[in-house]
Length: 262
Image (tube, rainbow, N blue to C red):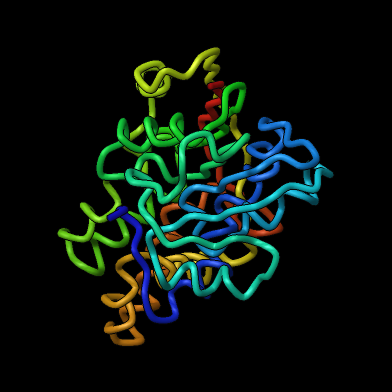
């Protein structure tokens, strides 16, 4: 199982809050893949489907789309959108024949898989000759101003044991490991690119309290008193005060992209 499992109302809140942290990277991920008309495209760890559903708009290509995720709750949210083959399954044991796809996309998924090399091997297996994989993962947590404070808030208000819940998020953060994973899977021409952007939210405390409800520790947060919920938001707002401008929060993010070929 991956390290970001959601249940209850969390998948719908994921669409409102967690996607804000990732959406500005999505178009770059898709453009890197250079999708073309008629190609078979797989979105691994598709979650609620927001990457899958942007492929045509961003690429302009009419592709055959498949989304794969291990989380039934996330897929149920994705299945509200027709025209995509939404599949329940593991990235380390994909339910597809060899050479089933021309493109594989994976946004913020590889770091969570219980066996990253097995997942990369599966990506290579399901890619047709000449196919490509486009994926991204976060840089280290020290380079993520909001997330660094968010994890501190979880430890402060929800308990120190919650810090470990987010260990995987930023754990695949070097060019060397991405290159090794691709090479050991038999992929070729791998290129890793670091990018920096700014994530914005009009109200820091509100965003922090929303984001935690779209995370695996949502249950613990919802069990808090209203006073402690507000304390959680206030903790984040205080710690990121230097990143506040007249429009709200403006925090730097670092993302690492990998493009490789079969």
